[in-house]
Length: 475
Image (cartoon, helix red, strand yellow):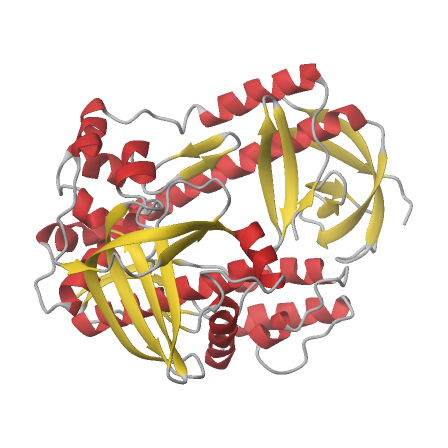
């Protein structure tokens, strides 16, 4: 469950943080060209021939979201299930070669700052005409999956259709409703989600599920850091997206054209290093698949977080591979245990527009649009560059908020858990519990991941986002 941490009460610190965050955001927050905004305001998608407005779709997102990419409808079908998964028809709204298309290609993806997002598309489109908002008629690309009693996909179709979402659900309140046994459009999601998680385990897939450090804007000048793990409903909902991404990859591989999200299988050296680390932590991984080991960890065990940090080395090397003709040699997403494509978030991620347009054409026996074929080669570079910007913005934001949370506490001695061993400079990565801050610190000789050490806060500079810790020598 989310854990809310300390907030910044001092007005001077609030002001300094606001200035620092504005400076961090400025290089990324480039206005859309006026012609792109005008295009977005006028954009309309083709009216689909298929009418699914009577299907009771619902969306499920973080509370307050407006850029709603997906809507679902779940029902029993004999001993199995039917899953309908509607995706915003962004390919239908954007004119290839136009100003809006060019602006989206330049941006690559939506970026998230402390006080809001820097969207891939103008908000009039991403939070308005193309978003699957409740009680609004919207064109969508609708995937329909037939699942058997074990959650195995037995049939998949994709079509452009007119839909109307009936409810906008959020994770926290929907999880509570399901826990209370209340009726909900998501009532079957736990059942289907668990079956799909079992299928993931059978494929040899693995989920890391590290707690996320999130900046929460709680008011003017007020920010918190949350360390949170996904709720069960988020994992179940993610399985719908993963199922769709695997279906998209299969369609594109069969059609000989597309873009895959890949990640290599860890090599023997990485596995051996992880085995050594788990043994040192007293929770040895001795046999079986690493995904099963990670799934079996006790989330209440204080050593689980250092183990998951160590496991992050096994989840490296993700990228995009494009092909037009022979399928690529590199096609697997090792953590999923199958070929996979990003195809469910076109309002927020550029590559999904290509995946959806290609899949729709191939599934209907038509020709892949020229713009999609011609633009394939540029996608990996554009996504890599935009991901680097997203990581930079997120890291800098967290650094400044952490410094602001700690600034009033200079001189305090904290207990901290060692997450990663010392680097070449002799500093290890440690986690302070409250406020939730991850930082580098010199630690006593012999301390290893999982150990609790004592560190003193020597300085916290809000303007630069730097925190300086020293070891006290105590354990």
